[in-house]
Image (cartoon, rainbow, N blue to C red):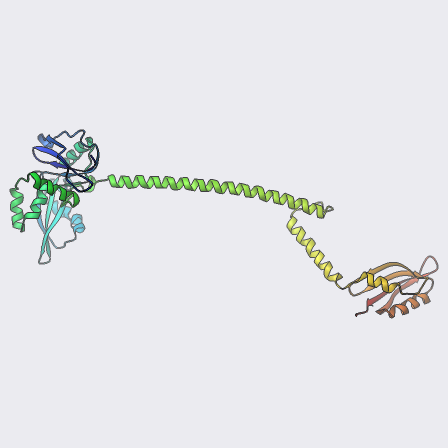
Amino acid sequence: MSGTAFIDLTEDKLSVYFLERNGAVGREVVSKPVGDGYSFDVEGISAGTEESCLSLPIGLLNFRVLELPFSDVSKIRELLPFELDGLVLGGSSSIVFDVRILGESNGKSRVLVVYLPKDTLKTILHRLKAAGLDPRTATSVELSHILGTAASPEELTGLLTTPERLEGEARTDQAVREIKNPSINLRRGEFAYTVDTEKTRKSLRITAALAILVLLVFLGDLSFMTISLERQNRNVREEMRKTYLSLFPDEKRVTSETYQLKAHIKELKDKKSSLTGISPLGTMLNLSRISGQSMKLNEITVEKDMTILKGECPSLSDVQSIKSELEGIMTDVTITDTKPSSHNGTLFTLTAKQRKT
């Protein structure tokens, strides 16, 4: 069977019922005698149970009815130990308790305090746990029945003093209601139900482990990609160096191909700007029109704004004739230097500008 086990403990026997998944009450699956000190043997009854609920006998419980100036249950549970220290033998540290608000009047709340010794509850829970049962709640079927039938606090006090024994189907129905909505729960403090917390912790540990696994896979993939990119980058740099050296084989020291290639490109751009508008072929064509047969040109420099001619003529008058002819095809013709040559001629330097069209 699978479902919720209701462990019904009384002064003389312990019975276990099942609330199935569909909410139906199953048959009584076990009934064991209870000995002195609420000793019992329920070994082997936990098979198939998903969770369980414990009902304590009303004769095991103690009660106090107090009037308090507030109705917040959590606040009452927090401050109640100070109230009980002077009312309970051994002080509040020796008991485990829960509260139920009975009603409010004149700004005060009437509170029922239900408690029992910690050692008693510890012994019962320990015996159940040894049999594989760990109840989610510790309540009382008989108490919940009294709380549901008492019409006044006075009647409640009488019923708690001389409780009627709840039997048969009425007890089973009350057990079902307690499973769904317990009237009290004495599993508090050090006796709190921790299975759900452990399940949550286990789930979180599994989630954390999966997250770490995913992270490791991601880091592994990232490391592989990094190594692959570094290898590709190294291959690209090697190809860049080979290409650069093929373009500039005379360079012996290459520290940064990109930087040095940019420097070469800048140099070429500068040369381009200085050579823009120069027509060497047109200059040579113009010079071919000079009729001086005895002129010998040793060097011709064609720049953007200037043409420089260096050569040799038989005499200075021939240099003047060449200047005159150049003035017909060029502008700003000037003889900048003349001197005798070793062959009894005249070395000359002429400068001129291209005529703009």
